[in-house]
Image (cartoon, rainbow, N blue to C red; front, top):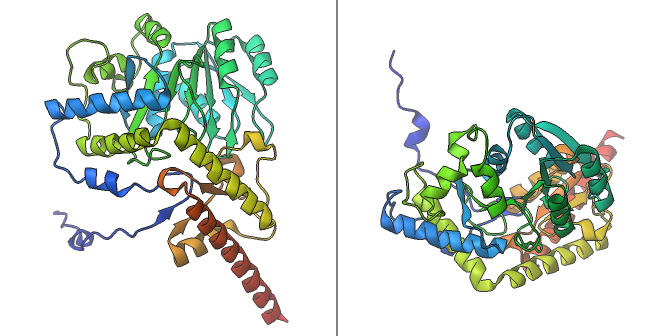
Length: 395
């Protein structure tokens, strides 16, 4: 039997232009898109290694860290979660997961596969964890590793007090892992000052780069722990002692670890350059202002934010309660069909309960906020009117 060439690949590629205002990815700037059209380089070519060095410096800036072990994992944001836990955890280590949505549970699933003794401290539905809850959990479980998402994109919850959690981890000789995939650039994060041991983010969120490279950084304290492991990390691909040698982190000759995508590097390099040119504080302030305007507009439309306590709202992924009697899918379909605008539904614990509106990178502008509010209102009113007409037709 011979398998013939697929007919679908005889057609020209067509990719529509969409405004991505869900929880990520966000739209890439023209600068980033043009960068990715440059010629491919070999993964050990000196020009490629130079771009990796420049990316590394950009990551240190956005994380506010001087950590030598700062690099990218070749993979989506989940690869950062995997790398953090894979390198820190040894068999039977107690790992405590902070839960304010689905990502703590996902990290728990991963940690369990590495042989961890997994425990949870879970906030009540729709709110962040309090310091008192976290302190009690530490006293009860005495964890070796504590994981928390600064911003949980499934619920739109911002976990504050990372600095105090960092102090608590040092008190208990515990390693702090912070997921800043959805939060970095939309709220303040100071890795070194807050005593964070591992942080990772997504290239496709506020940075506005292509998905596929995950910036990550390990503290000197974490790196010492990894070097003193009784056994090697269980996954070769995520071993940061090897990846860090490829990235030139340790002052040793570079080694081949895997074939990195040079085109993704170009895109991330330019996204970081644009971010650095604007300045971290200015980027954070812009995202905060856009979220505040969106929240005010939601209130004016007679809608309600999912997170009741305003300081616990994540500026980059805004969760809005779906009005009673409205099918969120119809709203999302209307926005996409008529305007090529992405508005997402809930994820994990918020499925069927919320819309998630992303304000990240290129889409974190007041003009885009006004646009999404107008389209959201139009979509909801259209669906209500259609429902009324349907009911009348039955009479």
